[in-house]
Length: 342
Ligand code: KG4
Ligand code: ZN
Image (cartoon, rainbow, N blue to C red; front, top):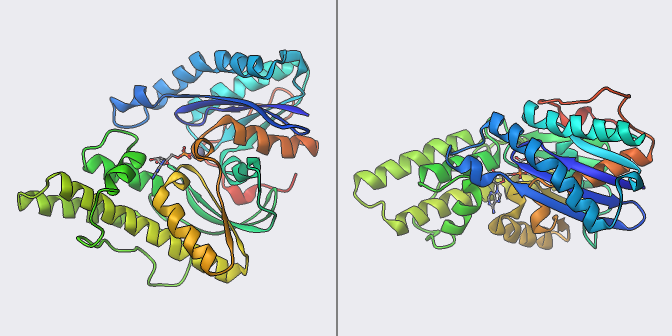
């Protein structure tokens, strides 16, 4: 089955073609980052309009790369949520329009299920069951995964997501949007012994996260250094390092707990923050110590992309799942654990 995947939930237009017999055939991405950078964050209306401009040419690019005609597609999967409603509607309307014209099934996919299954596109994919740490700009969740659609939420952030916290701390340090990867780069030059930030909610049992206090702590540290006249380049790098260590350590502590609680030996890490080098280093040594193994998507499939949507959609379309004719889905808020098995 040849499935076209469409991702338009936020600020990346992603398109890919996944063939259930041959794997990933083609994928293309257009990032709107430069357009939103002037505003310091995603402007929803601009995002929707840009998806409208980029999506059809990107679909054509993927078909050309795959050497296929539209009529050779067997099904279409699109991100139905969670995300920005206007942005989601662009993908949903395009997918439904194309599917109706071609007379093929179409299915709205859960964005986080896409992230969660993204490591399945790699050469050595994890077997079920596994613990998944989903760390993106909008979500921080630990999930007990026993199969496609068999998700039990173990814990999640009660306020900011990890990626959001990275972006906000980066902004405080004067870094351009999206700050997460920039802050990580700055942190590489930081002295890890100079400042120590708190590890929120690690001193009590449970698997929930909270990152908003860390944000306040970062601002206070920056103000203090400024008042002392010492917020030079090195100090900014030291703050970045202390912040990154605090987030990474908190995530590692909770992953360790989740592996202990479930008795599982496989950990999947996905979503934008899974690209973070320091997080990967720490999780590698942690899993190695306990005879477990960590799995990640390749770099460009950590952040939003069409491939993960094509893959997740294909698993469900293969089982016969599809949207009702003419009922397109755009669901801004959609809890992952309400999904059923295909
Ligand atoms: O999964 P994603 O592309 O979009 C959402 O679904 O939200 O994640 C984007 C988030 C942003 O907050 C970005 O700053 C963060 O992932 N991110 C990183 C890194 N690369 C991306 N955060 C820390 N270190 C990185 N290397
Ligand atoms: Zn995402």
